[in-house]
Image 1 (spheres, rainbow, N blue to C red):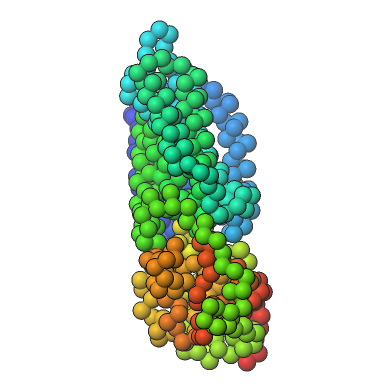
Image 2 (cartoon, helix red, strand yellow; image 1 turned 90 degrees about the vertical axis):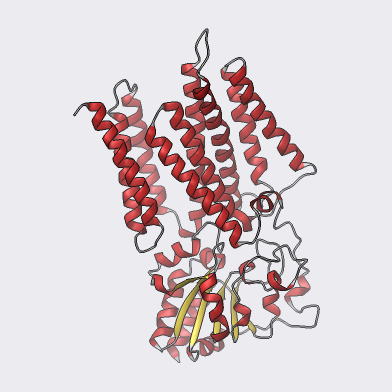
Amino acid sequence: MSRQDAISLAYLAAIVSFVLALRFLSSPTTARLGNWLGAGGMAVAIAATLAQRGLDHHVSILVVMLVSAPVGAFAARSVKMTAMPQMVALFNGVGGGAAALIGLAEFHDQAPEPGRIAFNVGLSTVLSALIGSISFAGSLVAFAKLQELVSGRPITYPGQKLGNGLLIAAAAGVGIAILAGPQEDGLLIGVIAGAALFGVLFVLPIGGADMPVVISLLNALTGLAAAATGFVLHNNVLIVSGALVGASGTLLTLLMGRAMNRSIGNVLFGAFGQVAAGPAAAAAAGTDGQAVRSAGPEDVAIMLAYAKRVVIVPGYGMAVAQAQHAVRELADQLEHGGVDVRYAIHPVAGRMPGHMNVLLAEANVPYPQLHELEEINPEFPRTDVALVIGANDVTNPAARTSPASPIYGMPILDVDRAATIVVLKRGMSPGFAGIDNELYLDPKTVMLFGDAKDSVTRLVAAVKAL
C-alpha cells in the first residue's frame, strides 16, 4: 500500500468516525462514546494530514499544536457549566475565523501573476472568507451577550435591517468582483472586513432568549465555511466534516425555531426581547388585584414531601446558581419518601441547545427521568407540585392566552395546570423575553425567593427534618 493510499484510508476512517459520532451523540446514553469517536477521528485526520507529501512548515504547525492543545484542554476542563454556552460560542467562532484566514492565505499563495485562479477555487475561497467571517464575528457577539459584557437585550438602531442588507450585499458584490475581475488580496480583505462587521450587526439585535437558535445557526455557518475551505485545500475529510456540521446545525436551528413556534426570520430579525419589562408594581400585584404569594423552605418542603408526583422544571436560574447537584439531592430525598419525581425539559431552556440536559447529566440524574415538552405536558394535570427553578419564559401562560404577547404561540411547559406551582427565583425581574410571567400571579403559585442553590439546599434540609 502506497503512502497516498494509506492517507486516503485514514481520511475514510476519520469520515466514518465523524458520522458515527453524530449518531451516538443523538442519545445521552451513548454521547460519551460519540465524543470519543469524534475526537479519535479528528486525531486520525490530523495525523494523515501531517503525513502528506509536500506539506511545509511541519515544525511551525507542531509548535502551535503543542502550545494550543494544553490551553484548549485546560479551558474545557476548568470552564464552569454555567459558562458552557459562552465556550461553545467561542469555539464555534474560532472555527469560522480559521476558515476565513485559510481562505485568505490560500488566495494569496495561489493568485497567479499574470493569470487567474480557477473559478471553482476562487468561489470556494470567497465563500470560506465570507461565511467564516460572519460566523467568527457573530460568535464573539453571542459570547459577549452570554457573558453579559454587553446587554442581552436586542441592540438596534434606525434602519438597521436596511443597513445590514446593504452591507452584506456590498461584501458579496466585492466577492463577485474578485471572481470576475482583479484578484487582489485587498479585495478579499475587504470581503472579510465587511462580513465581520455584518456578523456583529447581525447578532446585536437578537435577544438573549434566542441565543440557543443563534448558536445553532452560527454553528451551521462555521460548518459551511469549513466545507468551502475543504474545496480550497482539496481535502475530502474537511469537506465532509464541514458538511456534517452545516447540515446538523441547520436542522437543529429549524427544530429550535419550531420549538418556539417562530420562523427563523422572526428570530433573526424580530428583535425578540425588546419589549420593556412590566412596572415594578407587578411584583406586588396584578392588574386584577392578584397578589404574589411567597413561602418559606419549610412550607415548600411539606408540599413536596407529601406529594405523590413532583415535576421539576429546570431553567437558566438553575444554571446560574449551579444548583443541579442540590436538585439531584432533593429528588433523591423525595424518591426515598415514595414521591414520583420527573424533570420537564423545554427545548430552548437555558442558553444553548441541550443546556439543561448537560447540567442534569453532570449531576448524574437518570436519563429516563428527563421528559421532553410533548411527553410531560399531559402529565401536569396529574402533578401535585411543579417545582420551577428559574424557567421564566418557557412557563409563561401568556404564550397561550395573550395574543398581544411577543411569545404568543410558543409551546410552553404547562406547569400552570399542576395542582400547586412553586417558583424559585431571586426576584420578580422578567426573563430574557422582557415580559412579566403571568404564572407568578396564579393563585396556585407560591414563590420561594433567593439563590436557587441556597433555596434547594434548604429544601433538602427541611425534607430530611420531616
